[in-house]
Length: 221
Image 1 (cartoon, rainbow, N blue to C red):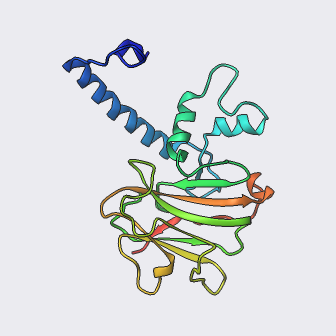
Image 2: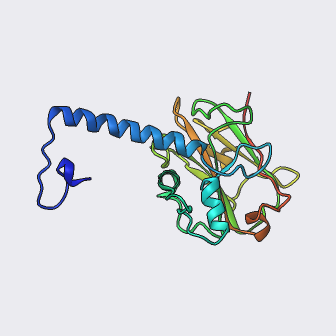
């Protein structure tokens, strides 16, 4: 396929003006397809919440049954695999026994916008054998937000805790007063998503049997 458009060993890439226009459109279409697919693909991890797993429902089922995570009896899950690696090319090293969940939306179902201030309440006693982290990532690149002052927070840090042991994580373009230690910076007007990572998640968590539930990201009004 690549050779047919002049890309490969011993071939010269000399696209015509028409081919250049076609390729430019294809790049934009493919990128939009990845962004939209990654935002909506995944297992709803907790009922009544907006958090989705990184892998699709079918990929998760294939993995649980002991099969190839990208193969079904009738097809190879190319799109599902592409959506997964679009989002995890940078942050993911080994998907198990870690739990990675993402959300593009607040508790009211609205897309997260970098101009607003949001709060994520992380309940106490996260069921992890290592640590947890919450980071903000750019929707357009699935990477860290460019020039972000603080890309995320984690439980190794000296985070401000509530009386019940929970932690409020704030996402906003500017640090909230008296909560700077719990702040993750966003970019004005730019869409973002939140990735919550539980490193060394307990068996109950991975089997979705743990009573512990992560709250929705809520817009601060």
